[in-house]
Length: 396
Image (cartoon, rainbow, N blue to C red; front, side, top):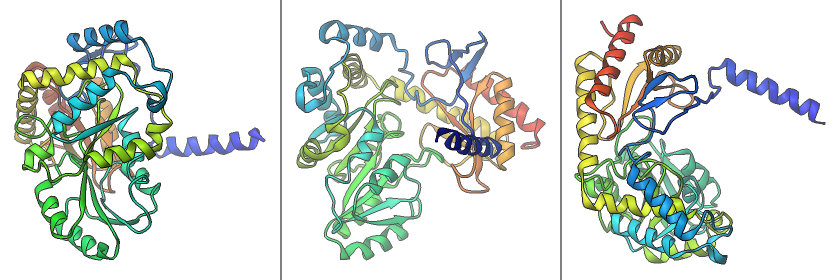
């Protein structure tokens, strides 16, 4: 049997490769940071990590992880509701709730699980989920697992969202679902306007803060801070794998009864192992650090502004961004791949994206800035962009 199936898989993999969509891993032989060492010993500057606050190799967090292992062990060997909950888990859940100014929090193995396990426990075929067209794959999968009626509105288009809300009045309950920062364009969802429409049409609001928490807002507390929407957003999901240290783990935080229902019925929570003490201990330390100082967020914002302004001055077309994601638009798919390859030859790691990851004719290089980057790193990347851009005729 496997012989035929093997041939089928080989053909599929060959087609993926021929389309330029085959994903190849880059082997890093160092800690994750602004400058990384590759397996062959060469160095590169990393501009494609989600390490927004530069905490992935923070010494204070590593010590906190080690201390947590010494005090609470290596793993939990259980799901939460059987014997997988330690005092550390409850401390972290409270720290996250305090950070987002919510009532309670539930931890998951990843934000993919948080989004995947959110909708089915709360909504039925009588209800409606109204989702932004550029929402993350985990939200899309979570919505698919739920029997609720589905509506889809154009990215951050409030007129289209209002149309969906009007149509959804036929359902019992409605929830608007959006990313806080959209990972391909770097734009921020207009949460104040979304909340206004939610109140007008009696809908709940959910936002995925994976790319926005720690990044947007005057002190980096995310979209609720950015738009003054505390108390108006019912559900936040997020990750510990980006700005908040870059390890593993996700969460849902929000209204008390919603979180309580998820503890009872959310399948990824009920049937996945509990987060290990090292990750939980280090994550608690992250929120202590962020409460002490806003310096990392300030540095990140300064880096974003510096990079964006220099790239625009050089003649590059960059999507408007309020986040740490800068989309350098090239529009041509093959060009985006060649550009990324030439940047790698210059010692700069960036990623080219094109259809079907982004719409046809919207190919780009996605650059992700970090508080770990120093100005010399930014200058080296900008100079490489200019050199490659001129070589390939992108700029003059």
